[in-house]
Amino acid sequence: MLEEYYEELLNINTRGKKTEINHSIHYHPYEPTPYSALEELFKHYQVHSNDRIVDFGCGKGRLVFYINYLFQVPVTGIEMNTSFFQEAMKNRNCYLDKTHRKSEDVQFHCCLAEQYEVQPSDNRFYFFNPFSVQIFMKVLNNILLSVENHKREIEIILYYAADDYTYYLERHTGFELIKEVPLPELYLKNTYERFLIYRLALS
View 1 (cartoon, rainbow, N blue to C red):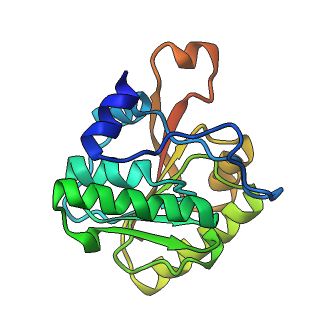
View 2 (cartoon, one colour; view 1 turned 30 degrees about the vertical axis):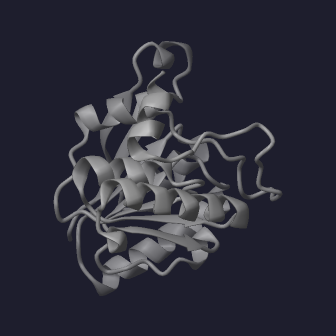
View 3 (tube, helix red, strand yellow; view 1 turned 120 degrees about the vertical axis):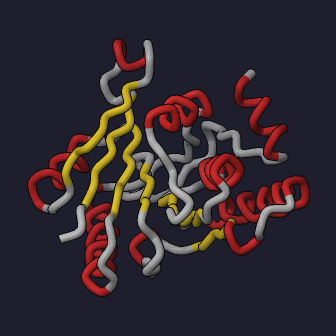
C-alpha cells in the first residue's frame, strides 16, 4: 500500500523484479530501498538545504525522487546498468512533469560507480549494498580525494550494510559511526535491517 502511494505521488515506477540483475560478480541485483525504511530513516536523519546527495547504484531512481520531493535538495543517481538507467530517465521525465521541480536538481549518470567524478558540492553519499567491497573501496577513495581538494564535512549512509563495508570504514578510514537507525520489528529478526550513518569530520 505504501509502495503504491509513493509511486503515484511521485509519478514513477521503481518497483524491482527478481529477474532484474546485474551480470557481474561485483554488482548486486536491483532492489530499491522500501519506502517504509526511507520513512523511518528520515524520522531520525536530517537533510539540510545545502546538502548534495549521491546515490550509488540508484537503479530506477527511487531514493533520488523521494529525497528531492521531500527536501528539495539536489540528488544525483549513479547507475551502471543501461536498462535501469533508461528506466530512471523515464521516471525523471514523469516526475518533473508532475512536480515541476528544477531539472538540474535531479540528475542521473550511467557509469561505473568508481568512474563517477565526485563534485565539490557532493557531501552525502548513499549505499544500499550495491556492489562488492572492492568497488566500495575505490568509491571511498574518490570521495576522500575530493575532500582533500575541497574541504567539507562528509557523511555516508549505509542501508543493509555488509560486514566488510563497516569493517573497512571503521578500520581503514577516518569515518566514524555517528548514528544507527534500526527498522522497527524487522531489526529484531535481522540485524542488517538498519541504517548506519558515518561522518568524516572537517580536519
